[in-house]
Amino acid sequence: MEKFVLVIHVLAALGVIGLVLLQHGKGADMGASFGSGASGSLFGVSGSSNFMSRATAVCVMVFFTTSLTLAYLSSHKSATGSVINANITQTNLAPVVKPVPAAPTGAEDVPK
Image 1 (cartoon, rainbow, N blue to C red):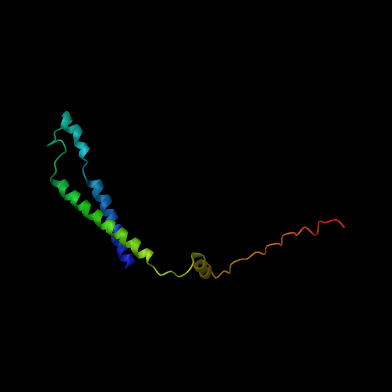
Image 2: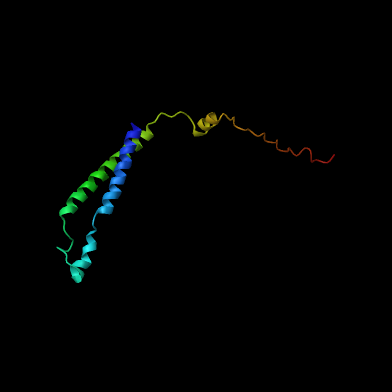
C-alpha cells in the first residue's frame, strides 16, 4: 500500500512541476501590453490558463493528500525495536564494550 501511494506521490509531484513550468506567467505580458508587442489584454489570454490552473490545483491536492497519507502510514508502522539493535543484528556484530579503569582512591599516594 505504501509503495502504491509513493508512486502516486511522485507522479503528482512531477505533474505539478511540469504544469507550473508550462504555465504562462501573468507578469510576462505586462511589457507587451505597454507598446513592445500586441497583447489581447493586460494579463494575456485566459482561455488555456483556466485548464492549466485547474489541472495544477488537482495535482497539488493529490500531492497534498498523498503526503499526509505517507506521513500517517510511516507513523503507524509496527516498531521492531531500536535502530541500533536492528543494525547490529543485520551485520552479525556484537556490541563492543570497553572496560573502564577503576578510579584511583588516593590511598596509593599517601606517604608512609
